[in-house]
Length: 444
Image (cartoon, rainbow, N blue to C red; front, top):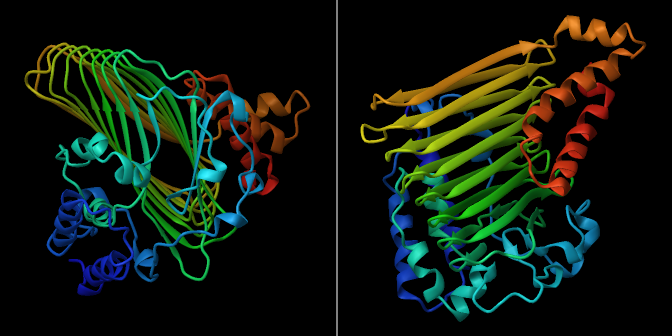
């Protein structure tokens, strides 16, 4: 069934109601970018069940709500609103965004050289717009959907990291997006940029969290540009409010011999979806994308990967695992495309799922399309329940059933978490997953 006019109106109303409160930076090119995205919303195809990329997604609950950009009263926020930090204050460069807006009072970057930027898009547009205009205006190499256009129509703030050539950031960067709602359901739309020039190195930890049962819609986009011989570690944890909708678009472009290591963990939100698009713009580049998702009662969690191999001698690894412990639904859609000139490609994709309850649902679709003839490629998927032999083994050694089920789940999760090279992040992710399965009701 085609999208109803009311759904088109939903997008247009959001733009109309929020466009007037956009900060005017007096930048014609920025206004033109916003306006072009606004006009595209009127004609671009809307998600519907006939589109393969959206066939499992039910957006009815999203469309029933109205959402509004809002600045949280930052005076009411303090470190106590963020459960805990991955790093101590002195161990990292720390940034906080509340409802998509930078909070300087909770952020701290330590003695950065003038040529490195870690901060707010809104601030940079006010002080040095030339530093980001090229990247904001770069044409998307993938086909953007209507939610990406919605984000671009209302550009106002987001994370910016710009590391010049042959420079290593001295500490990890920890960014927390804390989302909440006051009188209105919050529309949270950070537009983020990560640029590593040739030979640069950096590590980024991003966390998405919400307070209580706040109703909000997080619709963020992140564009990552990796120059030649760069090295980038990227860790993401989505732990939104139990009533939130979360949609992330990550676009990654890699130049010659660049290395990307990314781990995505998704545990929260009533409805969440992450789209990751990767393209190699130079030979001998390497991309590792790993993910872990847990799905509880009435949750919907969705990962879409699109990895494009168009040049020779590039390598990609995608390993995603899911644990469904409630009557929810998980979706994994992974696509690797190997073009004719991408000889000597080494690409492997796997998705494995563990179901703990009878009525859990998993829809998994790994795809591998190969047009070259000299490649090493594979893909596979599994969906299964707890191994009774493993349970019996643990029970026979005096371990009660809850603890035995928990141990199996944590061992399954560790197969992904072991890819985290940073000890602090690894411990933080482990504790988050353990918190879920320490609850007895999660394993009944």
